[in-house]
Image (cartoon, rainbow, N blue to C red; front, top):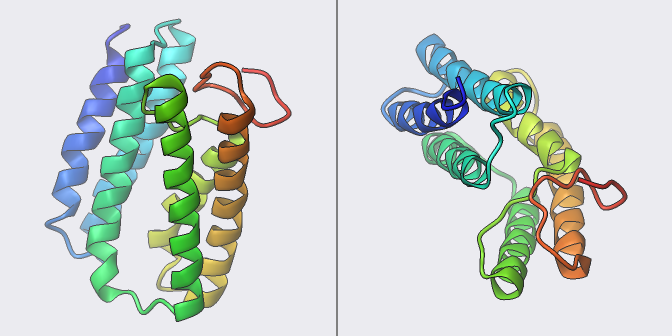
Length: 177
């Protein structure tokens, strides 16, 4: 039972690769995509409930999240018509995220994406994107997602700069892990 969370994270990585071969607006894509999202929810939940959370599992979960979102970006990027203002905003968020990763690397000699509530909200908003893409104007959807992602990126950078030790499971700038 204690290996199930890591198995789910590995499964998410493998299933994410399948997304690369599916058309993004199809039912099959959304079904496979939903399975990826389900494994993302369940791996952390099971790890906490079975007391099997580990440093390795946390890193594996972050890697699985990156592969999953990376696959989605690769699939959607060719069909998206992103307004230049949103594209510039996304680039700024990416630079803040990279700065945060560099701070962690130089401070702690590690790779870490924090499991803050704001990062979880960003993940949820990004996860909802394929479902909403056909129904909501890209400007509105992009504004909402970029706002949430900006808050999360800035919060994570502030935490990483000001913290004395790396705590991947910190809940937020004002919350203890």
